[in-house]
View: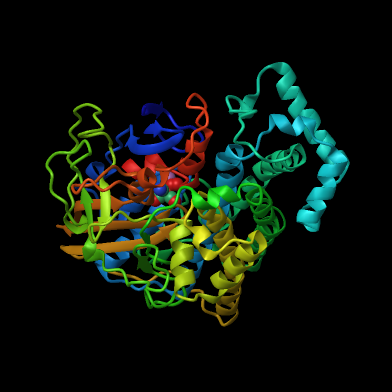
Length: 531
Ligand code: NFC
C-alpha cells in the first residue's frame, strides 16, 4: 500500500522547502515540492530607480550573493543600451567565477556530503589505512595518519558530549551509507578543511567587490572598483584563486570521484528529461556566441541535438501556486499577485511559480550546463567529462542521474577555475597597455525594456525590467531554484525535482536519506526561488 512521507523542512539548504512523496514497494511513486515562504522582491522594486535594482535584488540570497546583482545590472545595461568596457566584463567574470568556486565547494562538503558520508562510522577507521587510501586518491591532497587521528579525536569529542553539533540529526548507521570507515574519515576531515577553504575563497569577492556577502562594486555601465586595478590587488586575487584551484584539483574533484565509486547505483536514480542553460562568462561583447559556457536547450536527453534558446518561449505558470489567476505569462509581461489559500497537493501547494520553456519543465544548473557544453563539443568540458566517465567506468547516460548532477558540479568547478586564469591575465594585459577603463556612460531613458540572462551556480537566472518615467514599472526574476523546485504547471507536468524523485528507493520511511540525496543534488535555494 502507498504511504505518504513528508520531509518539512529540508535542512542544509537555504530557505524553507517541504517535500512530500508517495512511496509504494520501497520506491517513490509520486512527489510534490512546496516552497514555504514568500519574499515579494518584485513588488518592492516597483516605482524605484532602475539603478538601485541590483542592490535590492542582490539581497534575494546570501549564498549566491553576487548573482542577482549581476543579473540585474545586465538587465539594466540592456535597457539603457550600454556596452560595458572590456575590463568591466573581465572583473564581472572573475567575481562570477569566484562565486561558482565558493558555492560549489560549500555545496559538496557542507550541504550534500553527509547524505553519502557517515561521520560516526569514521570513528572506527584506521588512520594509517585512511592516509594510504587518501594517497591513492590524490597524493597532493593527502594528510598523514596523525592528521586523520586528530580529526578522529575531534569527532570523538562531539560524540562523547552527546551533542553532535554541526553533525547532529544525521541518519548515522543507515544501511544506505556504503563508504568504508576510512573513506568516511577522509571525507569528514575534508569537510572541516573545506570550512577553512571556503572562507579563503570568499575573499576573492572582497578584493574586487569590497566584501562578501553582497558585493559593492557593480554599476550600470561597468564596475566601480577602478582603484583596485593595481598589481597588489590583482596578485592578492591570483593567490586566492590558485589556492582554491589547488583545493579543487587535489581535494574536491578526487573526493567526488572516490565517493561516487561506492555509489554507482545512483547513476541510475534521480534523472530528469529536459535541460536548459543560458550560458555564462562572455569572452567579448558578443552574446551568446562568445560565452565560455555555451547557451542551449536539450529535450528528451538527446545530446546529439542542442537547440538555441529563445527567451520568448519562457513562461511562468501559477495554477498550482499561491498566486492570483491562472495565466501563463512570459516574464517580460509577468505578474506577481500573491494569494495564499491552503496547502493542497491536488490544487495549490507552493509559493514558487512553475517556469516552463516551450511548455516543458527544464532542469537547470551544473548538469544542464555540462550536458549542453558536452553536446556542443565544448573541448574543456569534453575532456573533463570523458575523464570522469572513464575513471568511474560508466557511459555518458549515467550523467542523467543524482550522481551525474553531483559529479557535474565538481566537473564545472574545475573547468571554470582553470578558465579564470585567462581572464586574470587579460586584465593584466589591458592594464599594461594603459587601458584602465571600467565604466561606459549612458543616459537613463524615460521608457525602456531590458533582459539580463546569467548562468549562476544553481542554474539559469533571468531578470526582466520595464522602465516608465525613468522608474521601474515592472520587474520579474525567473530563478534557477524556481525552475528546479517549482510545482506542477497548468498542464500538470511535474517540476524537475518532483520528476527526479520518482523511482527513488526508500529503505526506511522514518529516515529517508535517499530523498535528501536527490533533493540536495539540486542544491535548492528557496530564498532565491521565491524571491
Ligand atoms: Ni540563493 Fe541562487 C540564484 C538560486 O539565482 N537558486 O545560484 C543561485 O542561490 O543560491
